[in-house]
Length: 502
Ligand code: FES
Image (cartoon, rainbow, N blue to C red; front, side, top):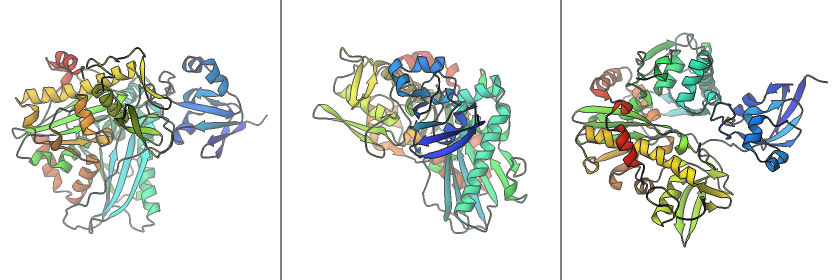
């Protein structure tokens, strides 16, 4: 018996040779399958279908699928092992990764540089000509650490409790190195960038820089490694760039508020407004920054994965096949599906729309209970929203709404006092602001709400255009920033309960 087996992945139709007995997780991850629970067999969101070949169902498969589904070949990708030749169907497709194409104001300077937005789920890099301001190229990737869990808390858990800190550091440095190589190759440029600037949340900052994340895993979640980190290409294994290229990971603001938010402040010029203004980055972790009284008040709030489709029975990330918009016309739901065709699931923006429509038309009560005998609402074809999904959304929206409410109250402000609201982050940019208002996620006047795009990447590019003078502006922002710890706030519990209602 040969010690290798052939694994064919559909719909790409590509075949790979693997050592017999190798877990399929790494191959499937590289081909786009996500592992939200880090492959622990509990989230049931890494489904694959075995079209040919066999794979004995594990105990986790038996919990995840009915007998009929198991007979049809459904398995959890994280549990599959390459023990015979197999043909698998993978439903995950290319993710939509938000980049930036804003034209920048700048003073020409020599050379080129790369800005990188290092996110928990996705990574985006852009190469800039600092003399002309021209964008030389863009490269994106999924964060390879996602095989250890989809959110920052599971990465911290992997680092602390499963001794994977060094591996997470290696994975992300190598991913960013590959992105840079990709940019250089794609553009066939003979020149090299002279500088690499990275922004990211506090956990990404620590893991890239190789800092211990233990302090971020326990109350009061305060790390002493928040400063910016200058690095050489040799230190991070990017020797292909040579020793004369330098890099810098921008500093974190505090707690879980990282340099992606710092860059967002620079991109939106939040620190320069003459009226109260707010920046809200919506994702699994919501970060909120308020500029008022010549200070920047910031906090982070754990919204959980509902906005990214996880923990929602038919939820998925915003990728091909996801219902991303929902309207209610002539007594039925109308939807938009990313990439067209039949829907495979519903992403965060679709879920918010669907619940907003259902609320407006009396299908859901304001306490979140379904106003019918069934335990779900049918949206389209087989895509439905269950009572449990609505509860998950209530928890996520309450976490964000609580953060906003507390940061405003702390500064004796009310919603109409805010004259500018910037939405950022992958979810923030796709959410419909009217639906967000209907479910009580955002209570501001609609006219003041603006979509900021990828403010982290834009902010990083603005910094490159003003480097190194911008360091003074960064220090000034850090000086006027005050981090609030939401969990310790005396009104947190009561506010959270109040915000649960739609
Ligand atoms: S069950 Fe969660 S990643 Fe497989």
